[in-house]
Amino acid sequence: MSQPLYDPAWLERMYNIRALVPDHMAYFDRWARESAEARASLPCQLDVAYGEGVGERLDIFPARGPGGGRAPVMVFIHGGGWRSLDKAEHAFLAPAFTQAGVCVVLVNYALCPGTPQAPVTVPYIVRQMEKALAWVGRHIAGQGGDPGRITVAGHSAGGQLAALLLTSVWPLIDMDLPDGLVRSVLSISGVYDLEPVMHTPFLQQDLHLTEQQVLQCSPARLLEPPSGLLHCVVGGDESPEFQRQNRLLQEAWGSHTVPRCQVLEGLNHFSILDTLARPGQDLHHMALNLLRA
Image (cartoon, rainbow, N blue to C red):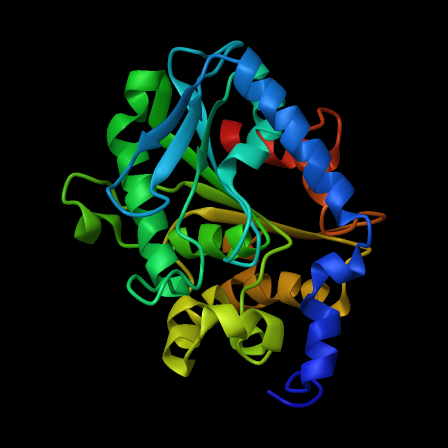
């Protein structure tokens, strides 16, 4: 990888998304407020354990509208640079989907760097997400969801995690799971090659990525998955690096697996996630098309 991608100051400008969106706290505050309202008003099961480790909890919002018997399932993985944020702050996404007949599952994971006694790495989080999806595959039918119709959506770091789940070999994780447990993925403002992240000081100080981990956890460096669809989107107001990252999976995996690789004009790294929760917006339609396919 050539300069300027190894230049720390340039990388900070490209990947410090909170600095690029000065009013980012207004988004976080509103998401938290609307999420608290959703958690209080919608039928839901909160903090269900999918494992015994730190952060291994998920929230389930059953479908409310048509299709509540065997509803398609949207598992959402939050962003935060693998080192911040929480599922509880993203429940604002649930109402529009549950009303459309979708079962929504929000998952948590341990945050980097963890503690000296229990360090957390990006590969560790990947294993947690596989554990979470395995739990969903085994148990979501009890919540009215269809384990054969699972779509994973992820934002930012969650987009990287979601994309990797298409490459997981599920029968090796659990003999009772089908090969195509994750049928489709919607990755929003994702990061698909972690090499520049490894050289970005404010991220690397917590992630401690190694070259081996970059190879292991960069979806764009892995072989095209044998099945499944992935749509990737990025905001037109995001940094040139995030827009470059958005193109990588279609270039690596081909248009058969990644038929949509889109720039949504006028949106930044945070406002793009708002549109996922708004019926009538392109990103919401894209999600529903994957869920109902």
